[in-house]
Length: 352
Image 1 (cartoon, rainbow, N blue to C red):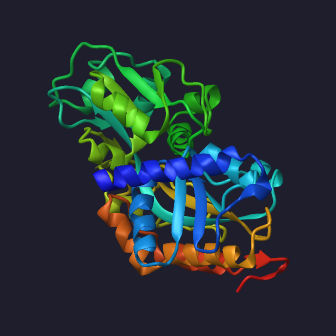
Image 2: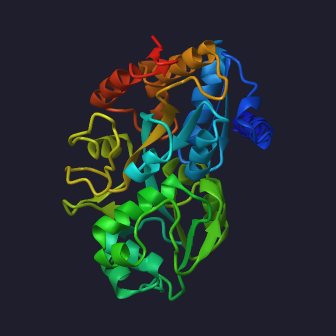
């Protein structure tokens, strides 16, 4: 853990130095050194992935976990080779930048974590989660929570929601789910990387939310499952469309992707109708420009980017996902992504 922690700090420092230049043409990476920024949701997986990539002498990757919104901004500014995002770009967002390719890196789950001393197991339905974060349910012993958890001793204490302060793909995934299970949430707050939560405490990044929930009694927050595992924070099972109370694991996350996937992989798999599916499952993407000649990048740099993305889709890389509590991509998604990588160009010519 210490090694990963200090590696992460080093990567963050590297990216901050790069981003502080503020000029597209000041990028200093070479064909052996790539830079990325964005989602914190998959960061534990990326730490393992990038370290292995480096140890095999395949190349060095510097990645800053600054949130999905920040990663997309850095890609638009041309100061990174790729952006990490838990939310695919909307049609409107794609009109604001040159054509991009979405490459899923793994699948994961957003969990509803809580700090309730003496309560080791909870189950929530989607409408109850929506009403907790909207403030309609404000006490832990609310009858609707009690009905779902007849064996739990729930205190007469106020619930403190914790949410993201930064532009976050995790927030997009969470609010996308809430919109699907609550018409009131969709009409009042909607879905997005940033949402005006009506009350509670804001925190930056998945690590920030995990930190506050782990230290604050009677709190509840949404975060990537690995952060709950790493800090031993309890998280709830969630009732899916089939009426099953499901915990996130490789099988239940994979089940959520059992439906049809569009060719560009831009899809949300929250609230899946599949049996056994965990309802707040998602893909997380690495996003790159189709035309790789930007910000005075060399063709070698572009080839290094393509090679790295191919590695992410490899069996070796995908097998690492399970070791840090993510789920590997379904083969159909890997096949689609490999086809999409054939669209990469340099000066208008096919990259490979």
